[in-house]
Length: 113
Ligand code: 5GP
Image 1: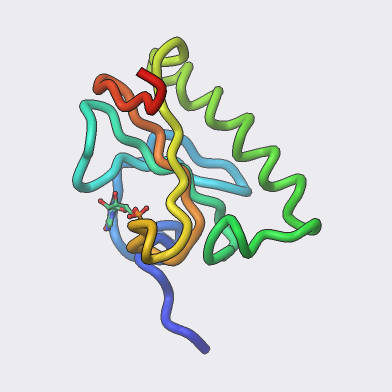
Image 2: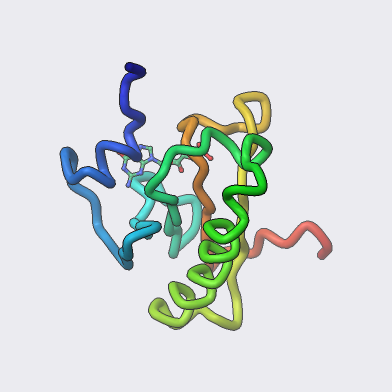
């Protein structure tokens, strides 16, 4: 049995977090070290280590997560201005090996301008 990730402990309510949204498939929490004025993490409740480890069986869950990005953005009132970042792998800056989507707003992060 592998050790739980910090996110699994948050999902299991073993450690506290500021929960923005939760359903049976995912949880959205405030990031403990925000990189922008609004920084929320959207995390699936099942463990997928990283997006490149996802498979066909995860298709519905991945679609659900993207739909929830929109719902969470509306909850936060940022639906017209936010970035979504998924780090994939340690070399890309991933520190918690449990798939999560960063939802960031209030700071210009666009890679195109
Ligand atoms: P990564 O670098 O893996 O893409 O993102 C991990 C994120 O999790 C970081 O932005 C970090 O600040 C956040 N984080 C790490 N530990 C905790 C924690 O215990 N609680 C919360 N809410 N966020 C955390």
